[in-house]
Image (cartoon, rainbow, N blue to C red; front, side):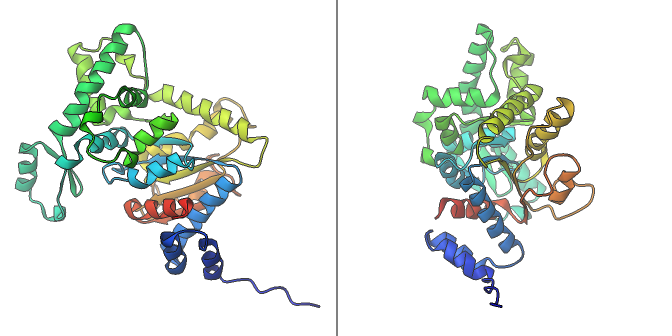
Length: 348
């Protein structure tokens, strides 16, 4: 009886997979062998395999990924067709545009852990809003965008039209009103890339973002007469349900499914993943498939009673993932991890 061929060690398999890729991927294949490093590579290979099987991928953005300039890598993922829909917080939607038009006015604070209350007050007095180690300039970023988007809010309001927050952002990008203020290469803006592809974007909880607060103020002041001129919340869920159902039907003829790549936790992750049990349990559509791939990047360590710290298998009992769904969790800083996963998928 002939012996079974010896199974190749993971590092050999990964080295072979990386040969056709660039130096970043080859570095990952050589050094990322254990613990969260190995989980990163497994998740990246799973992402790649999911797409090769004909699948689609939804990416969620929590935290301050746009201010961390994730657009440098995410925009290319969008352009290359590696992302098919995005769910993000209102902050991530607007902060990508803030960075686009005011990058040169941003200030980095490397010693942010040691700032005193007086230091923070000094930043406030200068209208510099801090996000960890980065200060966003209010006048050059937030107020500049407010003046442009307010024109669109008022015009839609007077015409009796209603649009989602991301549609208003698409409008101002396509209108070209911001181009004179661009301070970074627009190829590094994930929202510009999404706009070019007319990518579906879902923005749950937009009201708590800076522009959401500003919109509420303009409703109170009477500049915008109809509070529902900007569509939000439940309407976004119905849009997501429609996108998921249509995409699942399109994929049914092949082997592909819809994947879920989650950066951070919170509403950006919880809102969209609930669309499947909603379709199953509330609309009685058992033929709608479960998510076919799942990965979460989070610095929230495994815990009990925490959504962000819950292990992926917990989602099985909620009707979100199947027992057979490939599941990955990378417990690390997304600003470090996500660009590396994207680099592998892009073959860099």
